[in-house]
Amino acid sequence: MLALTRKKSESLVINNNIEITILEIRGDQVKLGISAPKEVPVYRKEVYLQIQKENEEALKAEAIAALKDLF
Image (cartoon, rainbow, N blue to C red; front, top):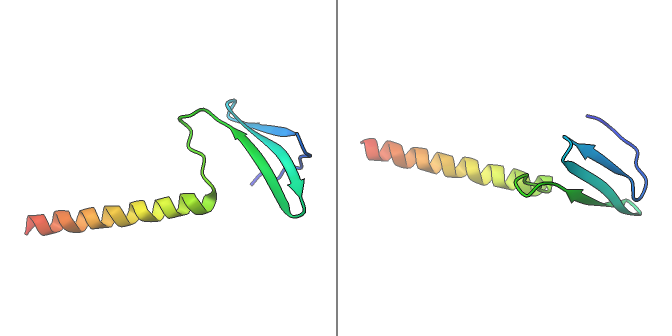
């Protein structure tokens, strides 16, 4: 993991096309602005993990249905 120190209004760039800017710092919260191409999905980690879990469950359900169709 790369750890960086940034101040309000400072940015970092990832892969030449994603820019993350510190918009606001208030107490223990930091507000980030993310500029990325539309084809690059950007999720909060808890949302991303939920999507992954639901995708895994859907794959299991499809596999079970396919096995039932074989017999």
